[in-house]
Amino acid sequence: MKGSTYRRCSCRDPKTGKELGTSCPKRNSRNHCTYSIRQELPPHEDGSRRSFARGGYTNAKAAQADLDHVRALLGLVEADDPEGIQLVAEMLAEVSGEKLPLPDVEETRRRLKAGQDLVGSLTVAEWLDRWLAGKRIRRSGISRYETDIRVHLKPHIGHRRLDRLRVSHLSEMFTAIADGNAEVLEQNAQRRAAVDELATIPWKGAENRARRKALKVALDAMPAFRRVTGPATRQHVKATLRASLNDAIGQQIITFNPAAHVEIDPVRKPKALVWTDERVAKWEQTGEKPSPVMVWTPEQTGAFLDFVAEDRLYAMWHLIAFRGLRRGEACGQPWSETNLDRHSLTVTGQLVQDGWEIEASEPKTDSGFRVVALDDDTVGVLERHRKQQQADHAEWGSAWVNTGLVFTQEDGSWLHPGKVTDLFERLVAASGLPPIRLHDLRHGAATLMLAADIDIKIVSDTLGHSDTRITRDIYQSVLPHVGKSAAEATAKLVPLQRKSEEDKARKAAEKAKRAEKAKGKGKKKSKAKKAARKG
Image 1: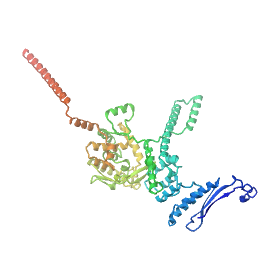
Image 2 (image 1 turned 135 degrees about the vertical axis):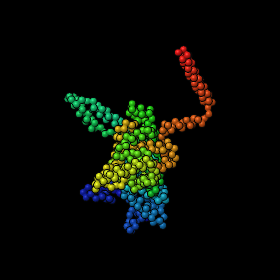
Image 3 (image 1 turned 180 degrees about the horizontal axis):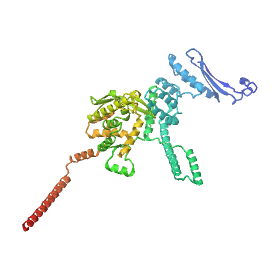
Image 4 (image 1 turned 90 degrees about the vertical axis):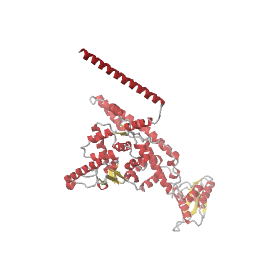
């Protein structure tokens, strides 16, 4: 195909504005003109012509080098590969039109063989938008992905070319997030100090009013209180990016996923602790929970259920406490999947919260679809609840909202999961019991089942876990009496000479004590007999 380099003068006639071209008086000067190249490209599929053109070269050598580069790219495909010819032609036309750097010949050869896009101008932000638009998951999941992309990924790496994203870029992003956390903490501390100072300034007095006004102006200029990006959020950001890049690999846009290799701080999940007497006493003194995840003892669980026995949603608290349903599962459980005659219910859906909006959804995983066995007491509780719901239905009449769910508002409409959590927290506070979260009531159900020596597989299936390791890692809190029994059973397995000698000494001491006691009783009887004879 034809191609050439040529000199070009860009001077223009001041009157007409047209280029002077060969009539420019300075054209023959060595450094006056620039060099340009033009290379014919394979025509469009409709036969129309196209070419690669570029100018601005300072000398003929540089222009010839780029012309040779273009010809080398054209030479990557054979004449009997019309698809490859069109791909290279489109790439060169785009590079020419967008004034992009010429692609590397070997990289282009590799991309052709791998079936990848030849022009890697797609940015991370553009790909994330495309990827998110193609996701077909529930709305709450989309919202979580969108937040990660909008708040973290786009601001830090959105401008980078997707095919040039490296592990080092991601390390820099997470370092910047950590630095941002430090800044947020400092700004929060400054704002808190100003708020505390404002609370100490009296309202009366001109000087005080001026000081209050100045502090309010300063507060308005400060950033609002913000949350830091914790380890769990950073891990989720990494997971979002990793999932999107895996799909980019699947579509042959890139070949390497840097998110799979970047290292960030692991999430240290809080350990569940039981509310023992000692921990309760300390909580009553300080108001501090020993751990974010706390579990009631069986006695405390019973005390709570007794306290809320007259609550309209007692059956829900009872079901979560004994069978471990999740909040959304309990809120979304239909009567059609609750068979009280067979003592079972089937979890087939849930109500999920997206912001403050709620929607019905299937369980998140296959293991979430499960059959949960019900004990006699729980069946009785649910039967009484159904009778009460039927009475409510009759009272509301035509205004009743027939959702078909087990647990509803007074008019039969959906319960809001967030409001259920708020109600639970108020009930716990009113009961005077040490605080737990609503999810910890499910946690307690798992702990009780494990304490009752229920097989770990049955516990895992009841809770809807995909693997028994999840059950062991998250939910196995040791109740005090179970731990004591296990410790005693373990200790008895080891024969110790020291223990034997201690046992002998203890038994001898007990025998001597009994003998001394018997001797004392004998003296008392002897004295009594003497007194009787004297009398």
